[in-house]
Image (cartoon, rainbow, N blue to C red; front, side, top):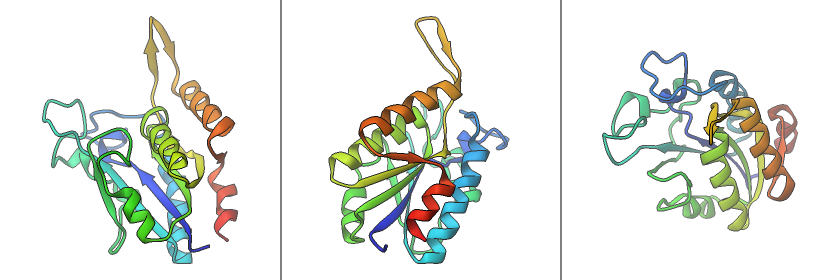
Length: 187
């Protein structure tokens, strides 16, 4: 059991529609964070590892997650506590140019429960990278959020973006389930 860790990716103020200064509000962030918070509480109760990932763009010209801004801070609903590592990243992939892999190795982690945002970017990239590094991955789909996209004049609602990415991940990369079902993994 101790070889399982919760990886919370980019639950940052700029993604929360309820945050007054949000620069990149996603669809369903609060609901996703609520489910992530339930997982977080159980991981803490069980004494399992919890790792937070926080994204900051290196330039103030970025559309969101500006360096040292309030918007780039982890939201209070899933804020880290003492001794929980916080990985700062500047890329979409949480493993790229960070010490995430070495932190997980030091904690003897073999399984990851992954939650956060955005489903089609950072969750997808981190999950695929983690699998490639040999971790068994589980994504709590109801603890992830994304937004509407547009490509070539076609608007894709957030719900469909999210479903497409969860479908792809579950097909060949990892177990994708509800946060309630994934609680059984650690109990």
